[in-house]
Structure formats: structure tokens, C-alpha cells
Image 1 (cartoon, helix red, strand yellow):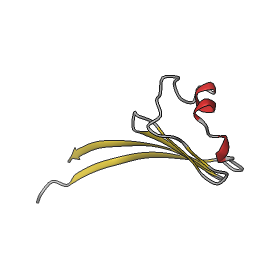
Image 2: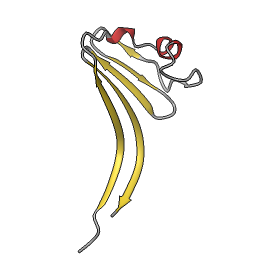
Image 3: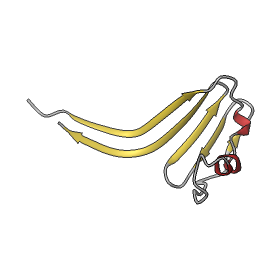
Image 4: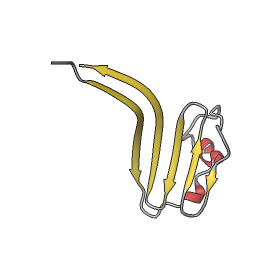
Length: 82
């Protein structure tokens, strides 16, 4: 029987955050709160609205906020042969 292959393309950690305000998720806030290092560079302009915020960095990390959650996502390429 062939050995199964598992390939991950994305790894996400989602936190529940009741009453989260997505508009507060800015690169300045993230850096000054030490949530991210000062040297992280934006991949593109952040998307900031009262209902959704998305910030993408050049290191393949994306942070997305909604009214009740915050997700940290990293694009990865990992293959596991079992």
C-alpha cells in the first residue's frame, strides 16, 4: 500500500476575542504593543474597516481581525511522508 503524503500550505491560529474592534488592528499598534517585531515589513497596504481588518507582511504572516476573533496565518510548505 502506498505511503500517505500530507502537505500543509497554511498554518492558522485563531483566538476568540469578544467585543474585538478590528479597526484598532494597525501596524503601529502591533509594533508598539510588541505583538510583532519592529522590523516586520508590510506586503501591501492594510485593509481596515469596522468589521474586518487584514494586515499582510513580507514574511508570509497575515493577521486578520473580525468583531469576535483574531487569526494569525502563515503560508508554509511542509510535506510529511509517513
